[in-house]
Image 1 (cartoon, one colour):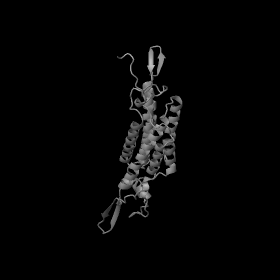
Image 2: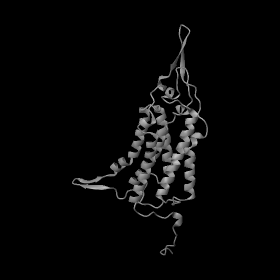
Image 3: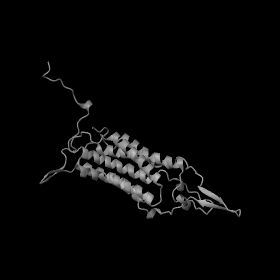
Image 4: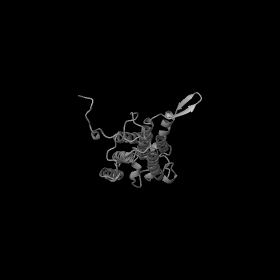
Length: 276
């Protein structure tokens, strides 16, 4: 596959960066839906009423600095891992225009993911598992308004991690699929093909995304459905934009160290002298 617009410094890159920034701040485009507080009123025989809270929304809150993956660590992981992989692959198997395609594809995937997640969060306005804690529940009603308490669906951590990590894994899987010849280790009983091992190593970033997603349920920051939806959103955008900028997996691709073949339109057609 030939890469078009191979320079990272270009008009296309500028538009991608602008689109990414707009997606990043898209949660401010409209306010969060103020879903009514979920509660039940129990009327006692003496005439008094008691408010019963929903136990699934009364979980303890884990402060951000005590979470397994606070936002700062999530951003470091979702930026450092893809950039690090791209730099290592570029040094080992340089291909003209590939870094630019990687950056553009990843930023487009992340931008679309941010748009989808932020707008869905605001539109749905679903309660977090620790909703009563965050809204300042006094036994009868909320004492403060906190939109973040109604931004549980879908999970932003899950969507962000799956978008960045799956895109990185797809990039690595494409590199493994394109290796020519296949990596072998000579052993007394024959040669051992290392392809399966490399495939598993390529999936390490995606395994990290699963860890991030699972931690959100463990710490009562999201409901399981929030995490599953976020993972699906991030994965879908990652797969779409990888397919836009790179060849399909398992396509017959030349060795990564070989120069790229010119585009078909650049090949000069010459007349075969053997033909009459």
